[in-house]
Image (cartoon, rainbow, N blue to C red; front, side):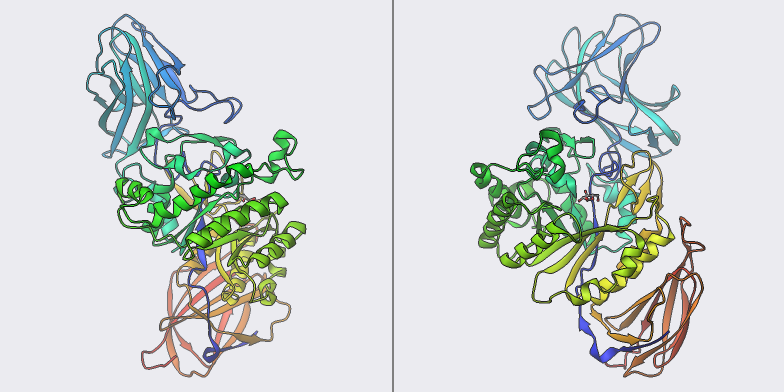
Length: 627
Ligand code: AHR
């Protein structure tokens, strides 16, 4: 292939093209990124979350031959109204300790020498109150233990630090007592001290580091379908997710489990700041998922349930309050709550997404428009992102675009989950988009193999597509692969970018592609012409400061020679080259080349693209060269 790229015709593109999309799917939050080690910590699991779940899921009683414990649950006189259910641990007469234990999320992983912060709320309902013995055990071997202060007859918070004497993968957390009587127990929590940036109520360090390495320019949260939910009360309500964790209202996760909301808006915004990424919260457009109708025979004939028009002022006020919470001064009503949580400075919210893949019904339009107008009126500084409906084409897609055009919505969110061939065949999709209409956010996308595995074939298709997004980066402002995380024991949607278990992280080939585009983002695209007509080879050329970044994707089964010429510049420069190479399309990982430093002839450079590969060439231009 012969390619000529015209440096002097470079045009500006988005400097936020590659971001990440976090949704609590696949146990990505509780049991995942959120570092809490106790499952069902506040005994609020119900059969609505999952058919075989209830308040005592993940808990059981611990008795010995000389003393019995009986575990039950209760709701009278709870810790607070948002936290209705608690455990009632009855310790019988006898000798020694008895109590209850928690299995964590598929076992609790603890590391020798590390410290863990334990806390719970408890009260003694009868007899003489005493302290609790807290233990981490594996196969009855004690890995760590500590004793709380003595309980009282009123709810109180008790905290101890546990130091692990051994590394184990399957520990259980035990709460034991040698005082007979009823113990009410709620909000049992165990966090490693070593969370990301050592934040309390923090996040798993290895997972945040893996996300950080992509160099995401933004983070979208909390979904996905999680946002609109499948019932009015199942919509994500950001106000439920801030404040002390024991006062947050948990709810059913649309992906058929439970969300504690311990990872809530404060934690999401804090994470965005830690990553150096722009926060992009997505809020429901006051309509539920189009599939909700399956649950109640449809409300508007399109499967959506809708917030009643009379309740819209309150709904809209929540959206405006979010902007004040994120950006308002610490003296404002909502800014004060952010400041009290530990962040007096504003979070610099720039974008708000309204709606997720919604069917573009009349009900949707009325509600979207009301929210959109209110935000525009009160906060013209905020860019609203609308939605183009469920699929990258079809009736709703057309309706979504004409509605966005009518309203002049600045950015529209398009989702695409399609076979690898679709991406190769659509590399020119955005070349013909009308530059006078809404800009595009490719908010959820991934190539899907027939068996939904995360392999070389899908990653190559995604890399090729990313070169086309860079080329169209004047109109495609943002993109985020979906979903980001999957717990290997609880994966309900594949493929995903990052897989994990309780102790390790596995990065998919698609992850490495996102990283190759996320690191070294370009600010200007260098247009090119080439004689490639039918080879599965894609490329992009861009400028970033005094560097030229070249990315090649070869989807062919054999190597492809390329002659690359940059117009208007001559001489040799220094380049570093990194390659991801697959041995076969169905392979589940790439071979990674180490970074090679080479001489690069700007006017005529020969490059051999290995079969099934992605290559990034970073050319450092001589400081005397004027661009
Ligand atoms: O990414 C998984 C799901 O795909 C999202 O929740 C939804 O928006 C889309 O259909």
